[in-house]
Amino acid sequence: MEPIAFQIKDFKSIVNSGICKLSADGITVLAGENESGKTATLLALSDFDLPLGEKPASSEFLPNDDFERRPYVSVLFRVDWAAVDAVLTPELVSQIPPQAFSLVKKVGEVWIHRELLNGRLHFDENISKAWTDEIAELTSLRQLSNASQPALIDKSSTAENQEEDDQEEDDDEQGEDEEQEEDEEQEETEPEADEQIGDKPEEKKLVQYMSEGSFISILRDLWPQFLYFSSFDDLLPRKISFSTMKTGLSNQSPLKLQPQTIAKVRIVKDYLKIAEIDYRVIDQNSENEKTLNNYLDKKNKDITKDFSDFWQGDAIRRGSQSLERVNVKAQAFA
Image (cartoon, rainbow, N blue to C red; front, side):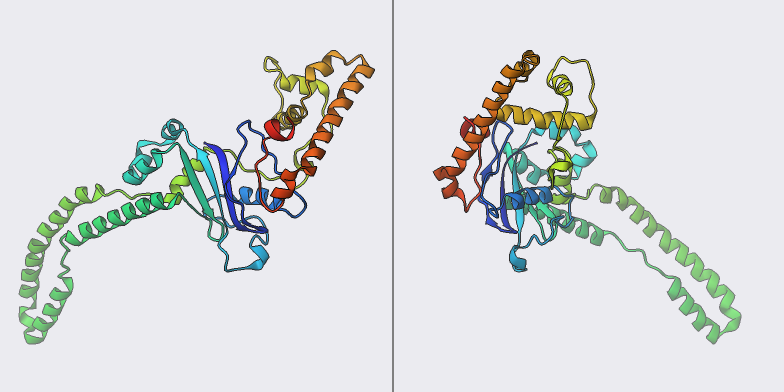
């Protein structure tokens, strides 16, 4: 499942972000002035990815402590239903409302919404209604099935009352009355027990549908993690050796790197892509300090100028009050 857009409402300083599309090239940059909602956006997306029912990890997420607001975060996913079907066992499929599931699978892109106050996850309204209606219909059928089963008659209390009456009337006849009542009770009870046993197979046919949120929790294992790093120390490397970079960037390298090192390589790789720096040029000029310094200085000036031009442009002034998608390659650093 690939996230391709999001929308945030009533979260911290964000009243309504509108639909923000993510860049198709895999790198999306949030650019804006201080207090314009960049950090709030990342925190909201991180809270979206929490397990079902969990409260937001962000403190003071309600805007200005306005408890009348109902903040939510929505993410649009492009779904590979073949991959979803691969993880659904026959038992799980039997627990999914078929009509609602059919509605979900009709589209290749699905909105998933999270209500932050209660941690509820759900689809669009039409799918949610179909899901709820099918669960309600199954519940009604189950109730009707239970109501139609013959109830066992407990005659023990009746027999005891009768025995007490008989004892008061005639103690001498107690033994005969008890024996006669026990025989009658056994004869009447056994057929009813047989009837109830015969109804059990029909009851088993009524499966229990999972909730909408439980199904989305299964999908959650298939979409990327939404991680928020509160400082550069979390992951961004302050220094990384060129030999490690070269190993990590070479698809044909036989060497295996540790997962933490791989993560650092990927981040540096993203920066090289944005700055349009070719690591092979660095490798080829490793012994030529002047040429290498000139190359890196030029790239550094280019990216600084591009960023400065972008901030001074009309796009920033027009978008200072709203969140905009920035395609790094196509717009900001072209």
